Amino acid sequence: MTPGEISWVGLLTLMVDGPDLPVRGVISSRDGDDTSRQYFGWAVIGGQPMPVFAGFASAVDAEPGAMPPDEPDPAEQEPVLIRVWRAGRRVRLERPDGRPSLIVGDSECWRFRGDDPVPVVAPSSAVVYQGNGTDLLDRREANSFVGNDFTRPTGPVGSTTFLGRPAYTVELAPPSHKPYPLQLVVDAETGLVLQQRNDGFGSVDEWVEIAVGEPLDDELFRWQGPSVPEAHDWPDPEREWHADQARRLEWFRANVAPLPLRLELDLGVFVHEHDPDGSFQASIGEDHLGMLARRPSSDAEWELRWDEVQHRWSAGGWDWALTWREGQLTEAGLASLKQALGRT
Image 1 (cartoon, rainbow, N blue to C red):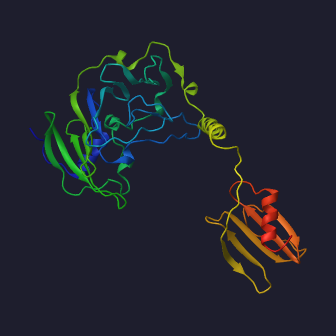
Image 2: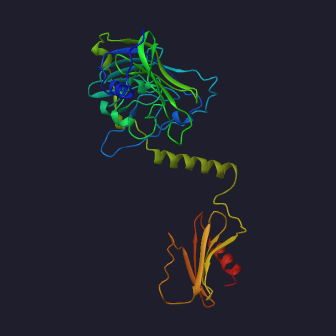
């Protein structure tokens, strides 16, 4: 059975304002070649709780800040499967083996990490439905169809049957910076997206099992066991980065050579400007490793508009200025440069 005709505006209204009926089932997600879908950054919005992402492309229980795995061959990649229950804003996600991954209640949510049976608790307002097809659980917002990023149909709305349910089909045109359109299958009763595909990339998020309208037990959306506060779960990325760099440098010292490394360089010069009085400004080395300038000796202020002037000296009727952007220029290195410039 297929639904009757509907306009694009009518389908938008259904996706945004459709009836909120209880839903349970299984969502499958396969990334294909669309690497932009695979990993997510982490951000803190001032005054708001740290976002809790409902899914991750590499694994449902991936750790925040973890390094992504090597990209799989799309032809060999197994889809990620998640068992889901949804009643309004309340959601429960489980791995295929029945272990919970995320429970979203009325005011709190509980996120389970790896094999740790103790979840992290956070405000339910922090949940973001993104990754592993979990955005199929969230009703589309009207502002998500503003602009030109998959917001305009390439043709009329069609009709189909999906998992035995009447549904609509529509293809959305990509923005100018993306190559392929997006295909949607929308449930005719609820307005939920049943399938979201990008045939050009070979990616697809879809319900593979679904039941709509069945009453769901309130206990599905509660966690009665122990939990740890959200703040205890988040690493300090900057501190961890510095600690990791220190470990790498220590390895280099022990296995390669003492630090810092010291060596002589042959440096090219790119003259930006020069004047008849002999003044000039120039870059030194590739990628503007340093900046060098001179002018006739003067007591007047010398404004170079550089970020920083590290060395100034006067010799032979000239004022000199130098900045060095990479590493540290030693006293011996500075003396060598002065000598190369013909001034000691």
